[in-house]
Image (cartoon, one colour):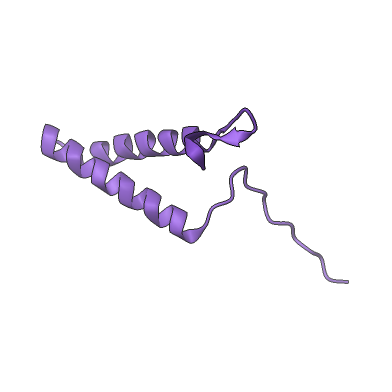
Amino acid sequence: MKSVSKKPRSLVPFMESDLFQLELLIAKRADRLRRRFGTEGGGDVMHWLRAEAEVIERYFDLRRPVNGRLAGGR
């Protein structure tokens, strides 16, 4: 008998287009940070990580249910 492996269940379902949009938002935010603060001493990586944290936090805040509906009108 074949063993069936269960896929881990995600709290929030993702579509490929969602992931692409998140990456695009992160890249735009990181670019704004780079333009504002420069790139000295590995700043590009720090800007990317900061942008990633900001965008993902905002994304999940918008998808959090509020009174039975998703915030942000989703």
